[in-house]
Every structure is written in structure tokens, then in C-alpha cells.
Length: 188
Image (tube, rainbow, N blue to C red; front, side, top):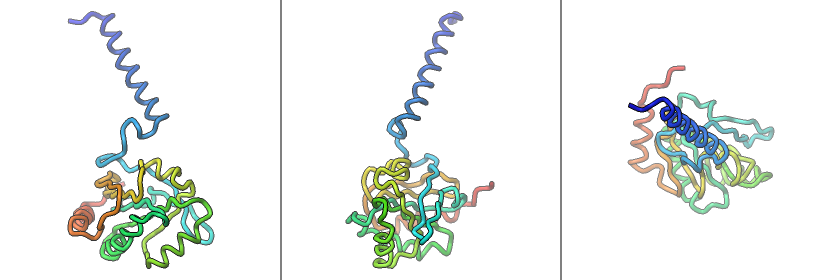
């Protein structure tokens, strides 16, 4: 049996380690434990491309299946995958999929982003992270290269996270979206 002074020391050490981890997490962000599958999707704020921009948040999509694509107009792999994202959006938006493309183009480039969306006939929601590549959305989602895509279930949990371009309209990705759309909505 352990004596009381040793128990107190062990508990103090455990407390200090826990406090150090929490402080490190606060100041180092996701560098201590990168955001990934199984984590709760962090809320974010990004502006619409309307003539009078509005701030939208992930919280507005609570209970929905959400695809967040972090991209830029200058990103060649982003351009490659946009048609497949649009196809996925066309197929599943009527069933409840919310596609949100968050541009990390530099501040003041809203018109360039709107022209890009028009050129590629994109009909899903496009927001602008005015902080660019160093903006809060990129930081929250640990985006280190573009595109970065996160699929979030109705429960707010990340179900897939992928860096780089992919065919989002592929049978594997469509099956994931179908499965997530069939899950019961989360009660408030």
C-alpha cells in the first residue's frame, strides 16, 4: 500500500502534467494533437461573397452532413477537383448534403473568387476566409496544403479528412455521403 505523502506527490505530478498539456494545447493549437477523424469539428467564421458580406459559421449547419473544402483560386489541384465536388453537390444537396468551399485567397479578392465560381459553374456555398492561408479556418482545420477537405457527420464529428485533390464523385465517396445522410439527425 502506498503511503499518503507518496500518493500526494503522484497526484500532484499527474495534475501538473494535465495542466501542462492543457496550456500547451491552448498556446500551440492543434500541434500537440492534430485534428482528425473522430474529433469534433471546430466552429469557424468566414464571410459570404455577397455584395454585403455576411459572416457564416459551422454552427449554422448543426445536424447536417457537411463537406468543408478549403481551397484557393491559384491552387491547381483545387481546380482539378472542383467539378467532382459540384457533381457530388448536385447529386446530394436535395437529400441534405451541405457543401461549403472556404477560399483562402488573400483579402480583397472576392471578385476573383466570384469569377472563379462562375467560370466553373459552381452552385454550392462559397465563403472567404479573409485571413488567407494563415486565416482562422486553415488553422482550425490544420490545413497545411490545399485543397483540404473535411466531411462532418450530423453529430458534428469529422468522418473523413483529406489533403490533396480527389474525385469526390467516386463510388467510395458517394457511399460515404449516402451512409452519413442515412444517419438519424442529432437531437438538440
